[in-house]
Image (cartoon, rainbow, N blue to C red; front, side, top):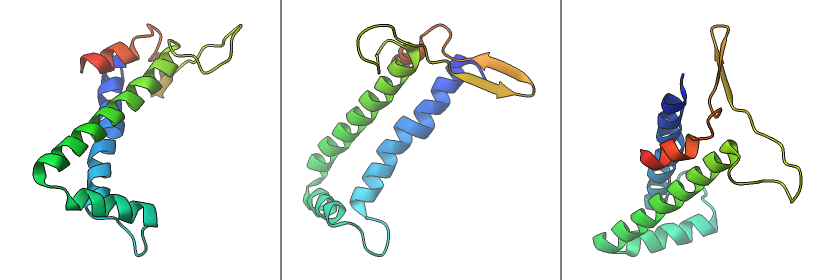
Amino acid sequence: MNTEEFVKAYKMVVADAAIEDSISVFQKPPGRKPSEELLQISNYYNGLNRDERKIIDMIIARVSYEASFGALCVLDGVRSIEEEGDKGDINLVYSKDNRSFDLNKNKDLHDIFNFL
């Protein structure tokens, strides 16, 4: 798996899935006894007209994008998770069949994601 393949998979299973899952949960909360908060969100969402729900869906998509992009920025080391001073590096390595691939060697995961 190379860097671009990783980012494409990440986008699909994290960012895109978060959008689809959130909308699905808001439309019909799962489980026997969903939380009161989730029921409130669901009631609000389902009470909106189609155009209003489309706006909420766009907000969900934007939040998913921003969170996913931010996580990749952390992995690339361009968004710090440490206080001031000497900071460490995060190395993202994919291993398969006795081979290892440094996925964030070029610190461009977030750029690739942004391009997709």
